[in-house]
Length: 182
Length: 229
Image (cartoon, rainbow over all chains, first blue to last red; front, top):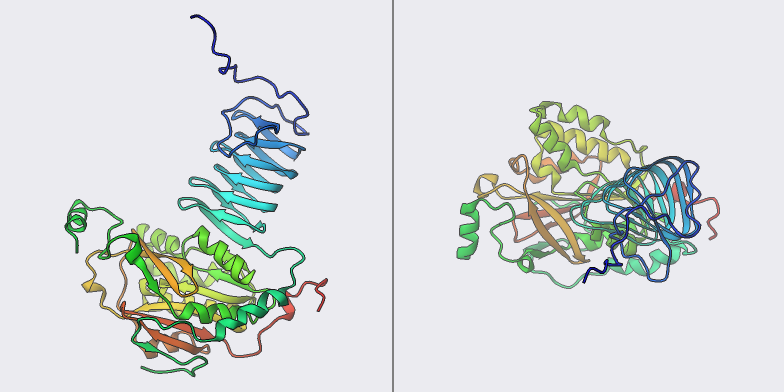
């Protein structure tokens, strides 16, 4: 009857193994990441009150609810910027999920997701980019896939020069038409 | 118009237009296919999108063309100037707005932004876009042919690419209404020396214009040093 609910644990339980090698960090508890943490994988949280200035490297998935200035490298792992997270840094990760704010360029080998309420000011380089409606983004998106020859990419597309299916329009200039005055 | 739409308008809902559900907001486009074809003449195209951020558009253009996309939402700039009562400064603002080097952009998506600008601002914006567009580059712009007075409620439109031949028009609240529609010859003069490559007049009281900058498509500036041919 009075048994304590084991699922409710103190918020500041330190991570069990190998946290990120922050130069000046103190990992503290934070709410569970809203980006889906994978089962069987370590997910480390950087809490709301934590401010990190410098370089942040890690070898496990990480959720940041605090502030980071400098550089973040999680090249083989998922980085989640929680809704309270404020990042002023270059970010290198396998995948990045943004619910908070990021100011800086992002490079992700797998994907970048900016979710509703998330904000990114910077350039994104990633093969997959998803920006939700309601997200803020200012910058550029480069989805050029590595190892893909640009010429190969463009060849089949030139088929677009052929006339598309007829549309309910009142006037259509012929392909390659010269300037026309109506 | 459905009664529910009428009541919604009376309530002052922002997202209601004369069209019904979202399905009815999907409309055909002819110029987009040609625009994509024009983009593909560059080896590593760079696309400048002047509309609001639409994630699926970034995914579409990234996937279809494999291009780098620069998103510069001008509607926010217009709204800011309107809200600060600084519309007269908009032409000067546009003069400094684009940090891109000259002739570095392969394609520009203006959508319908010119409909919301007065002549001086439109002139300056067109001048800047013409400057950054590379030879052989393409510019897609939509112009309303209807008198804005006939619009019950002014809206901006978020253009969402459904596929190569269809766009979804999602309205959202603007700070200012559309201005008087430009005449065809005014539009052509606005973008000189670009030439009109395609001109489609749609049943939706909209003109889709595809401009092209004369000259050979510049591929060299975008080739990476390691590119193997």
